[in-house]
Image (cartoon, rainbow, N blue to C red; front, top):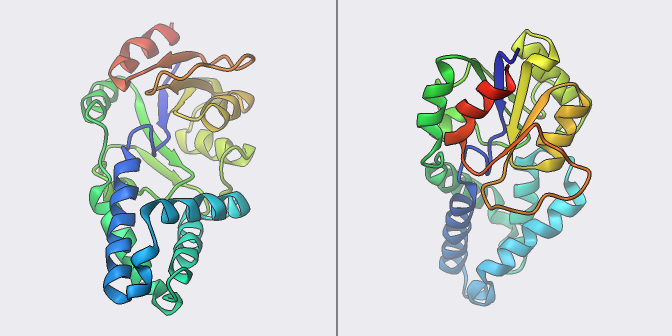
Amino acid sequence: MLTTVVFDADETLLDLRPAVTGGLVAVLEEMRRLTPAAAGVSLADLESDWAAVFGALSAAPVMEIRRAALARSLARAGLDAHLDDIAALFFARRFALTRPYPDVLPALAALRERWTLGFATNGNSRAERCGLAGEFAFELYAHEGGLPKKPAPEFYAAVVEAAGVPAPHVVYVGDSLAHDVVGPQRAGLRAVWLNRLGLPRPPGVVPDAELTTVADLPAVLASLGR
């Protein structure tokens, strides 16, 4: 019997992309205010700096990766000394703009009537800063207390421990097939793929259920729990 539903954060419950873009736009505007040398720097440059750094530092905490990406962007305009201020600007704007998708809060309210809800993420989207304060019985964040990132088995073991029930009683919901379906299933949890974009599913990956909206999750979980 399923008793606990645990959610990934970014691109699952939280509409992250507009928030990150807004943060980068604020950074670019401040760079251009600080120096004419930033006139030749584009939003695409800032986005590519994240991609380049993430590839090299994917196991690091997300906040460290973002700071490294911003450092790379600032170096384009000789603004290396401004990293702390620019990082603070980015994160303030990013968190101010990060909010749940429209289907999320009603679905969480419906789910809470029957299941225990948890929040477990690799990222730095803290629930209380993103419009999700008080929604979960427990929250887990990678790199806090030595917790490694998904898909490390220790991450899912921590989820099960926080849930306080056997692994088969826990279902993990997320947008990443590798992190939110394959990883949890290998650890003995159930897994639901939230495929908001309607992407094709590769062969060999079989989530316990696939959805395009969390509005359908209560009915699906009721079926899985039988």
